[in-house]
Amino acid sequence: MNQRYILFSDSNINFIILTCIQMQEIANSIVLTKPFTLRTDSDSDSEENYSAPNLLQRILSLLKNVRPGSDLALFQLPPLFNFPKSQLQCYGESVYSTSSDLLSKCNTGITPIERLISVVTCSISTTRPPIFGLAPYNPVLGETHHVSKGNLNVLLEQVAHHPAVSALHATDQKENVEMIWCQYPVAKFNGTSVEAQVHGKRRLKLLNHGETYEMNSPNLFIRILPVPGVDWVGNVDISCVETGLAAELCYISQSFFGFGGSRRVIKGKIIDSSTSKILYKVNGHWDSTVTLKDTNNGEERVIYDAREVISRLQTPSVKDAESVWQTESALIWSKLSQAILNKDWEKAREAKKCVEEKQREELRERESKGVTWVPKHFTISQSKEGDWDCLPIQKWVPDSPIVTL
Image (cartoon, rainbow, N blue to C red; front, side):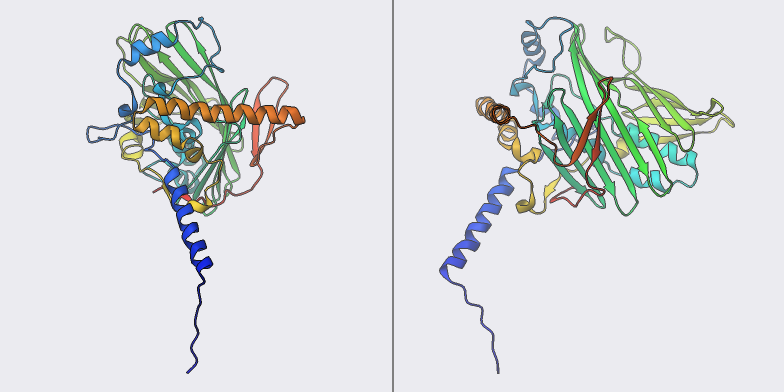
């Protein structure tokens, strides 16, 4: 009887052991945190646990030498004011961290108006409750964030630094759906508040229907005095050239002084652009429920329930540590994130300084060689008016070694 033997030398065994150790080290180095979620009474692991005491006093001290009207693009926050994650991760979470598959519903709508309503719902779901006094890290040039959720693959890259332009490409090959974002916040200090205007364009393509929906983002408003608070404000326009249907949404905050009125209100309408006829009215609160009222028959229904969509969200996990890119946000900022989670502010300052200094060194090296940095996953362009746009290089986003449910 023939027998086959597999022989292992000491060198082979050592190689296998070293490989396993290296993979475990990489896995341990990746720090992934709970996504921004609708906080409920049952949430014990709240983002609020990241914050330090006396936050308002610390913020006032931090901004005492900043002049009103100043652009905060180059303003560096100490780790004490950071969430343990990058802005790229926050953008990505708003797309892949949902309790229901909203993108599929956009594609399966039978009529154009049903699909537009689903797109409106999907757009509202990307608005996540912010927390006063805390901000994510500013991504470094070339940083990426890559996550898969079922058939949805999401890839982000920091494609420019000044201004800080972030690009997002999300695809679901099964549903034949594609999402492309190019956006860059411009924050200004106004003495008693900070407003971050989110410039750029978001596109959602339903390829089975030959429809492209273009939309923008609301702006982030941070009120420091007299009553601290943070909210999303401004107008969001959603339009589809192919169908002539459009939606106009308005995010409304409390009064300037923070007293009276409802919080996190959203109002709007869905119109037929060809006739300017209002088909539906949108009303509600983006952090609770949003309703749609048919102007023809007065029927009203809930199209968005934040508690169902953005509560109890799961933290992504690493499926294949060896395949995680070295440019991954969760890897670049891992030491800083872990220090913040441990509330070790000295280590946090050292870790943040290390990442920022490495970025400066890479910039000096490129300048000395006369090399222009080129994004790996997107092509970028700028109009005469100064508006930025990004296009993905690949048609479909590949599967990621980082996954979420």
